[in-house]
Image (cartoon, rainbow, N blue to C red; front, side, top):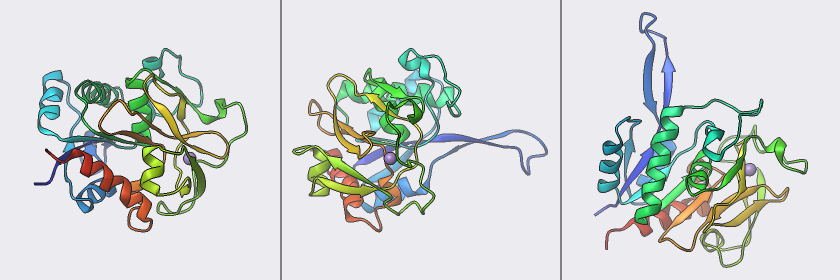
Length: 243
Ligand code: MN
Protein backbone atom coordinates (compact mmCIF):
# COMPACT_ATOMS: atom_id res chain seq x y z
CA UNK A 1 0.00 0.00 0.00
CA UNK A 2 1.26 3.45 -0.85
CA UNK A 3 2.05 5.60 2.17
CA UNK A 4 -0.16 8.69 2.43
CA UNK A 5 1.87 11.88 2.21
CA UNK A 6 0.23 15.10 3.35
CA UNK A 7 1.32 18.03 1.19
CA UNK A 8 0.77 21.52 2.61
CA UNK A 9 -0.56 24.27 0.39
CA UNK A 10 -0.69 28.03 0.16
CA UNK A 11 -3.52 30.38 -0.65
CA UNK A 12 -4.07 32.45 -3.68
CA UNK A 13 -6.42 35.38 -3.93
CA UNK A 14 -7.91 36.30 -7.26
CA UNK A 15 -10.65 38.71 -8.21
CA UNK A 16 -10.89 37.83 -11.91
CA UNK A 17 -14.10 36.40 -13.41
CA UNK A 18 -15.83 36.58 -10.05
CA UNK A 19 -17.76 39.79 -10.52
CA UNK A 20 -15.29 41.64 -8.34
CA UNK A 21 -15.76 39.19 -5.46
CA UNK A 22 -12.44 38.15 -3.90
CA UNK A 23 -12.02 34.44 -4.52
CA UNK A 24 -9.61 32.61 -2.22
CA UNK A 25 -8.09 29.36 -3.41
CA UNK A 26 -5.87 26.78 -1.73
CA UNK A 27 -3.11 25.97 -4.17
CA UNK A 28 0.02 23.86 -4.39
CA UNK A 29 2.44 23.36 -7.27
CA UNK A 30 1.67 20.14 -9.13
CA UNK A 31 5.41 19.27 -9.17
CA UNK A 32 5.14 18.31 -5.47
CA UNK A 33 2.21 16.00 -6.25
CA UNK A 34 3.98 14.41 -9.23
CA UNK A 35 7.25 13.91 -7.35
CA UNK A 36 5.49 12.04 -4.51
CA UNK A 37 3.36 10.01 -6.90
CA UNK A 38 6.41 9.13 -8.99
CA UNK A 39 8.29 8.01 -5.85
CA UNK A 40 5.50 5.59 -4.85
CA UNK A 41 3.59 7.69 -2.32
CA UNK A 42 -0.07 8.73 -2.35
CA UNK A 43 -0.14 12.52 -2.08
CA UNK A 44 -3.03 14.26 -0.33
CA UNK A 45 -3.24 18.04 -0.20
CA UNK A 46 -3.81 19.43 3.29
CA UNK A 47 -5.93 22.59 3.06
CA UNK A 48 -5.57 25.72 5.19
CA UNK A 49 -8.04 25.21 8.04
CA UNK A 50 -8.69 27.13 11.25
CA UNK A 51 -9.71 24.42 13.69
CA UNK A 52 -6.83 22.73 15.53
CA UNK A 53 -8.82 19.49 15.69
CA UNK A 54 -8.72 19.35 11.88
CA UNK A 55 -4.95 19.49 12.06
CA UNK A 56 -4.72 16.59 14.50
CA UNK A 57 -7.14 14.75 12.20
CA UNK A 58 -4.72 15.26 9.29
CA UNK A 59 -1.84 13.97 11.39
CA UNK A 60 -3.84 10.83 12.24
CA UNK A 61 -4.31 9.85 8.61
CA UNK A 62 -0.94 10.71 7.04
CA UNK A 63 2.24 8.62 7.06
CA UNK A 64 4.51 11.55 6.21
CA UNK A 65 4.42 15.33 5.89
CA UNK A 66 5.75 17.36 2.98
CA UNK A 67 6.08 21.05 3.85
CA UNK A 68 5.95 22.80 0.48
CA UNK A 69 7.46 26.06 -0.77
CA UNK A 70 5.86 29.49 -0.60
CA UNK A 71 6.16 32.97 0.86
CA UNK A 72 7.81 34.19 4.04
CA UNK A 73 7.17 33.24 7.66
CA UNK A 74 6.07 35.87 10.16
CA UNK A 75 9.34 36.68 12.00
CA UNK A 76 7.40 37.01 15.26
CA UNK A 77 7.63 33.18 15.40
CA UNK A 78 11.35 33.63 16.08
CA UNK A 79 10.94 36.82 18.15
CA UNK A 80 11.99 39.36 15.53
CA UNK A 81 10.37 42.48 14.14
CA UNK A 82 9.88 42.53 10.33
CA UNK A 83 12.76 44.07 8.36
CA UNK A 84 11.97 46.04 5.19
CA UNK A 85 13.14 43.22 2.89
CA UNK A 86 10.60 40.78 4.34
CA UNK A 87 8.24 39.38 1.68
CA UNK A 88 4.56 38.47 1.88
CA UNK A 89 3.14 36.71 4.94
CA UNK A 90 0.13 34.39 5.14
CA UNK A 91 -0.80 34.17 8.84
CA UNK A 92 -3.32 31.35 8.28
CA UNK A 93 -0.80 29.22 6.43
CA UNK A 94 1.84 29.97 9.07
CA UNK A 95 -0.36 28.75 11.89
CA UNK A 96 -1.42 25.54 10.07
CA UNK A 97 2.14 24.62 9.14
CA UNK A 98 3.56 25.45 12.57
CA UNK A 99 0.98 23.16 14.21
CA UNK A 100 1.57 20.38 11.66
CA UNK A 101 5.34 20.63 12.11
CA UNK A 102 5.16 20.56 15.90
CA UNK A 103 2.82 17.54 15.80
CA UNK A 104 5.14 15.75 13.33
CA UNK A 105 8.14 16.43 15.60
CA UNK A 106 6.23 15.21 18.67
CA UNK A 107 5.02 12.04 16.97
CA UNK A 108 8.18 11.33 14.96
CA UNK A 109 6.29 11.48 11.67
CA UNK A 110 8.69 11.61 8.68
CA UNK A 111 9.04 15.15 7.27
CA UNK A 112 10.46 16.40 3.99
CA UNK A 113 10.59 20.20 4.15
CA UNK A 114 11.24 22.12 0.95
CA UNK A 115 12.29 25.81 0.60
CA UNK A 116 9.76 27.67 2.81
CA UNK A 117 9.33 24.22 4.39
CA UNK A 118 12.91 24.05 5.75
CA UNK A 119 12.29 27.47 7.28
CA UNK A 120 8.95 26.44 8.84
CA UNK A 121 10.42 23.20 10.22
CA UNK A 122 13.46 24.97 11.66
CA UNK A 123 11.38 27.69 13.33
CA UNK A 124 8.82 25.16 14.65
CA UNK A 125 11.74 23.29 16.25
CA UNK A 126 13.09 26.51 17.82
CA UNK A 127 15.60 27.75 15.22
CA UNK A 128 15.93 31.15 13.51
CA UNK A 129 16.05 32.55 9.96
CA UNK A 130 17.56 35.31 7.91
CA UNK A 131 14.48 37.30 6.94
CA UNK A 132 16.51 38.17 3.84
CA UNK A 133 19.92 36.73 2.94
CA UNK A 134 21.32 40.26 2.73
CA UNK A 135 21.52 39.87 6.55
CA UNK A 136 24.24 37.24 6.01
CA UNK A 137 27.64 38.63 6.96
CA UNK A 138 29.26 37.93 3.59
CA UNK A 139 28.19 38.77 0.07
CA UNK A 140 26.02 35.95 -1.24
CA UNK A 141 25.62 34.16 -4.53
CA UNK A 142 22.51 34.43 -6.73
CA UNK A 143 19.92 32.38 -4.84
CA UNK A 144 16.98 33.43 -6.99
CA UNK A 145 17.97 31.95 -10.31
CA UNK A 146 16.59 33.17 -13.62
CA UNK A 147 17.21 29.77 -15.27
CA UNK A 148 14.40 27.15 -15.58
CA UNK A 149 13.40 25.35 -12.40
CA UNK A 150 14.97 22.02 -13.36
CA UNK A 151 18.36 23.65 -13.89
CA UNK A 152 20.93 23.21 -11.11
CA UNK A 153 22.42 26.69 -10.72
CA UNK A 154 24.71 26.52 -7.68
CA UNK A 155 26.90 24.04 -5.83
CA UNK A 156 26.27 22.56 -2.39
CA UNK A 157 28.82 20.93 -0.09
CA UNK A 158 27.32 18.12 1.97
CA UNK A 159 28.39 16.92 5.40
CA UNK A 160 30.00 13.46 5.27
CA UNK A 161 27.75 10.80 6.79
CA UNK A 162 24.63 12.96 6.47
CA UNK A 163 21.34 11.72 5.02
CA UNK A 164 21.57 14.22 2.15
CA UNK A 165 25.08 13.09 1.14
CA UNK A 166 23.91 9.47 1.34
CA UNK A 167 20.99 10.31 -0.96
CA UNK A 168 23.22 12.19 -3.43
CA UNK A 169 25.90 9.49 -3.20
CA UNK A 170 28.59 12.20 -3.08
CA UNK A 171 29.71 15.19 -1.04
CA UNK A 172 29.42 17.93 -3.64
CA UNK A 173 26.30 18.45 -5.74
CA UNK A 174 24.41 21.04 -7.78
CA UNK A 175 20.93 22.33 -6.99
CA UNK A 176 18.44 24.94 -8.14
CA UNK A 177 17.76 28.05 -6.06
CA UNK A 178 14.63 30.19 -5.58
CA UNK A 179 14.87 31.80 -2.16
CA UNK A 180 15.66 35.09 -0.44
CA UNK A 181 15.38 33.74 3.11
CA UNK A 182 17.51 31.03 4.72
CA UNK A 183 18.08 29.23 8.01
CA UNK A 184 20.28 31.35 10.33
CA UNK A 185 20.66 29.06 13.36
CA UNK A 186 19.58 25.43 13.09
CA UNK A 187 17.21 24.35 15.87
CA UNK A 188 18.47 22.27 18.80
CA UNK A 189 18.59 18.63 17.79
CA UNK A 190 19.18 19.57 14.13
CA UNK A 191 22.48 19.99 12.30
CA UNK A 192 23.49 21.71 9.07
CA UNK A 193 24.06 19.02 6.44
CA UNK A 194 24.63 21.16 3.32
CA UNK A 195 25.77 24.68 2.48
CA UNK A 196 26.31 26.62 -0.72
CA UNK A 197 29.82 27.97 -1.29
CA UNK A 198 28.89 31.35 0.22
CA UNK A 199 27.99 29.63 3.51
CA UNK A 200 24.19 29.80 3.16
CA UNK A 201 22.48 26.77 4.73
CA UNK A 202 20.97 24.55 2.03
CA UNK A 203 19.95 21.49 4.15
CA UNK A 204 19.29 20.62 7.77
CA UNK A 205 18.45 17.26 9.31
CA UNK A 206 18.19 15.47 12.61
CA UNK A 207 19.36 12.06 13.72
CA UNK A 208 16.83 12.07 16.56
CA UNK A 209 13.94 11.16 14.26
CA UNK A 210 13.07 8.53 11.66
CA UNK A 211 13.33 10.99 8.73
CA UNK A 212 13.60 14.73 9.24
CA UNK A 213 15.13 16.54 6.25
CA UNK A 214 14.84 20.15 5.19
CA UNK A 215 16.24 21.40 1.88
CA UNK A 216 16.44 25.00 0.73
CA UNK A 217 16.32 24.03 -2.95
CA UNK A 218 13.40 22.56 -4.96
CA UNK A 219 13.97 18.87 -5.78
CA UNK A 220 10.35 18.62 -7.02
CA UNK A 221 11.31 20.78 -10.03
CA UNK A 222 14.41 18.67 -10.72
CA UNK A 223 13.39 15.03 -10.23
CA UNK A 224 12.79 14.32 -13.92
CA UNK A 225 16.24 15.63 -14.91
CA UNK A 226 18.43 14.83 -11.90
CA UNK A 227 18.42 11.34 -10.29
CA UNK A 228 19.66 12.81 -6.96
CA UNK A 229 16.47 14.89 -6.70
CA UNK A 230 14.29 11.83 -7.43
CA UNK A 231 16.28 9.94 -4.77
CA UNK A 232 15.24 12.48 -2.12
CA UNK A 233 11.56 11.63 -2.70
CA UNK A 234 12.30 7.90 -2.92
CA UNK A 235 14.12 7.97 0.45
CA UNK A 236 11.33 10.02 2.02
CA UNK A 237 8.49 7.79 0.74
CA UNK A 238 10.43 4.69 1.85
CA UNK A 239 10.73 6.15 5.36
CA UNK A 240 6.94 6.74 5.36
CA UNK A 241 6.14 3.11 4.51
CA UNK A 242 3.83 1.56 7.12
CA UNK A 243 5.53 -1.25 8.99
MN1 MN B 1 20.30 28.50 -2.75
